[in-house]
Image (tube, rainbow, N blue to C red; front, side, top):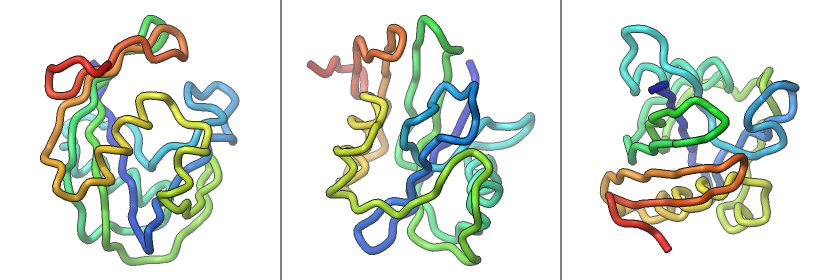
Length: 156
């Protein structure tokens, strides 16, 4: 299983979102997602998240929370475990990203974005600051979400 991270930086009721439009052969081309990427050898999820956020935004995260693990099963793409984080403090200046366009998006407008269907589920979970650490399994057939389970319980 591939190991990846995804982080949503929070500020003034917004998340920093990445519109994936710069790479042609990108599984998420045209979608809006958080910031993250693949774990390197001998790298913990926290180390990966910190590195990926720095590489993609120029920002150094100083306060974060590990929120959950998302298991992606797909009939097209490699299966993966994605470690999900939120961050509320950082230092540095936001820079351009070579993978897409970074924008601060109000949380109230997330539903209007071109998102993966499974992302809509975990974004709702992230909006609850008291939500405990969760395990979410998302199964895709092509680009379509065919099944989801939260903490082992199917979501209808």
